[in-house]
Amino acid sequence: MDPPYSGRCLCGAITFRCTAAPLWQGHCHCESCRRATASAMASFFGVADGAWEFNGLTPASYESSPGTWREFCPRCGTQLSYSSARFPGEKHFYAATLDDPAAYRPERHYFWAEHLPWLHLSDDLPRQ
Image: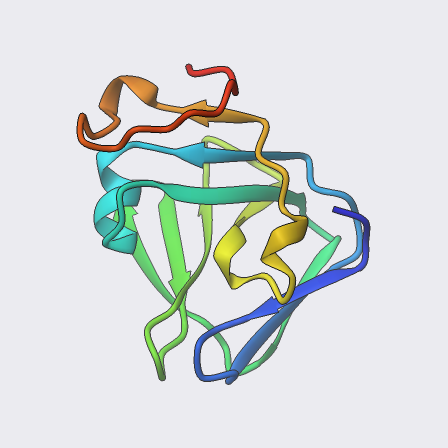
């Protein structure tokens, strides 16, 4: 994705804008991300701190595990981002919240060992 790029929650009360290219882009198959998004996998991209900003309402935050926070819209509930002490200096945004989600280019699958057996993907991305 070429900067700048932006996204929003379902109701539009929170928007975000990123001014740097993503550090990485990928699909996560871990149980925690699946439960947080109520989906078979979550598609993320990482952005360096200082290269993103939220506008509108302040996102609500939930500490889903020690040192890991999931930010979401307090009005409509849309999951917006993820941050963790395991990944200092960056925030992970959900690709489906982008204004132009077609610009997202995943590079790999994360936590493939936890993928759901009924999810069949035909891409050739690395699986770790």
